[in-house]
Image (cartoon, rainbow, N blue to C red; front, side, top):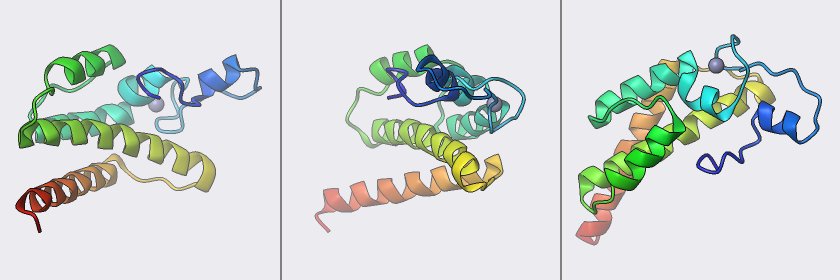
Length: 136
Ligand SMILES: [Zn+2]
């Protein structure tokens, strides 16, 4: 849905005819669009910066950058490629989850908390893959 820009971001909902005030709930400074929410937002940038450093990849600043990186750099089958793919998907998921938590539940987590959740999810999923390869 991110790659096709079909997530119900506020700008997409407005384009579908809903009357909404467009304001990003993560930074409260800019209008919410897919590009802003996942890449230009200061909150998302803080998350990407830490996760990219942890994964030893460049930080993402646009959807095109993510697509290009995903298609060319992580097509391998090794653990490093799996780690990067899972890291990318987990980061997108947790930014979207944080956005929804703020809108629908009034819950706010600092970026450091989301970064910890993503790294924990990465470690857990990689441990699971390793155990699968070992045959439990
Ligand atoms: Zn923002």
